[in-house]
Amino acid sequence: MFSVIIPLYNKAAHIEKAIRSVLNQSYHEFELIIVNDGSTDNSLQVVNHYLHSQQKEGNNSLVEHVRVINQPNAGVSMARNVGVQEATYDYIAFLDADDWWHKHYLAKMKDLIEEYPEAKLYSASYYQVKRGVRHKANIGVDYSFKAGYIDYCEVYAKTLCMPVWTSATIINKKAYEEFHGMNPAIKLGEDFDLWIRIALKYKVAFLNQPLAYYNHDVEQENRAVVYGRVYPPHQHFIFNLGYLESEERENVFLKKLLDALRVYVLHPYYLDKTTREIAKVELLKVDWQNQPMKERIRYRIPVSLLQLQFRFMRLGSITKQYILKHAKK
Image 1 (tube, one colour):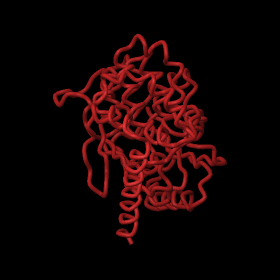
Image 2: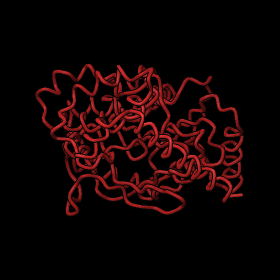
Image 3: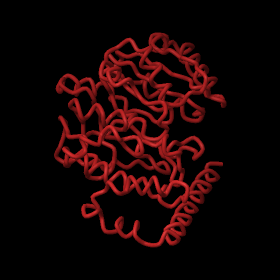
């Protein structure tokens, strides 16, 4: 049985769809815990209105399995951790408030758990939804791969498309508690920080079938990952991986993954004068001969040219969001 946890913060426009995708699952052995993390919009009212409407329609048996927990805003990691603390079942299924599931998601994941019981972390493929169009995530497994155990680092490093994405992930509750859940101090990559620790100790099972939907059409102000947003280094996972130093020297695939992530995410920190030196420290760890030529060039051309390129890309991102926002009106 599953404890489904939805952290909720200012997602009034999306939360009903997320809840509906859970309650409409073909497999019904679950509880749903919604942790309202101090929302300042009408997210909580939307939740209560939807649950009340389901009761009026005679769906009491489903609504009875839903609990809403309210807390002052403490961040998504604390919201998930609180949800896990309140969970009563052995497997935790995460779903973000702006994403949704295929109706057979839990049923398929139940089968995956039963077929691969040695794993502690389970995930499925997913669709990325951009401008209303879905595209299957380009995860680094062979097309012929159906289901089974994977090397998390090897698969992730191939395309840098997450093989364990939070809204398509189920974790053994005891494993979550063993690693003390998600680190509330990390604001970007808090999920990766936990997944990598678990994946280096336990097996990971993956189902190569898209059963969840990653919504990229969320308003910029309500997204954690926004191109050009620079979090303080102590809040970014890439600057908090010192505990992997010895394993990185021994594990070829871990080294390949971490180097690729450093090159990919450190760009804005390298461009910012206030964080350039700390970014350089991380970049010194990179084995550059194994990086794509375009990345080697990017970090060698004058910073002023990189800053100009960055501004154009940032402007393009802002313009696209403006067009999408006003197109909806």
